[in-house]
Image 1: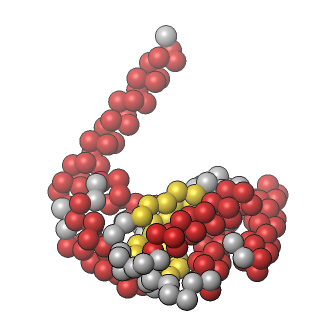
Image 2: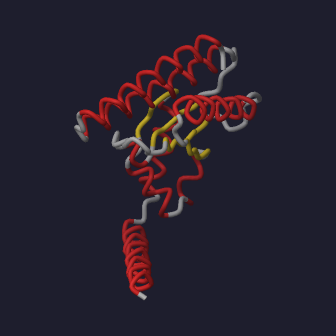
Length: 191
């Protein structure tokens, strides 16, 4: 991470710490979550822009927020769920750029902002094989940084291959499993 990016991340860390203090004094729900999400977005863009500035031949990438982060509903201890999508999967510098990106995101979020970051790396042609969990996360996705072409291509294939009935059955089964587990845990506590 270059010095300019690091200094900007440190500024955003202070801004988030102030936001956390405000929450203690005046809990305001969605407004707070939106401000917290905005800070995370700015960090992702800073890291991406810092890496782009250091590579003369940057491949086209989309960095996408998913799940609660994609919905802009980041609570104080929410994690930052990202999906990185390259448009040119055979680009010569892609592997080193992705490693640098993941390293800098972990440094920014994990070390400075003290937020967990999770990421997926997916290719546009992988969309038809997504499992239910991945499909669910992408329902609430949005582009945060990079170029829109890879994200748009992925989402086009995502929707073209979306088996609605199968997806709903998977969600019903997932929910039933969660309810059974909760009931079991409740019974165990009573014993």
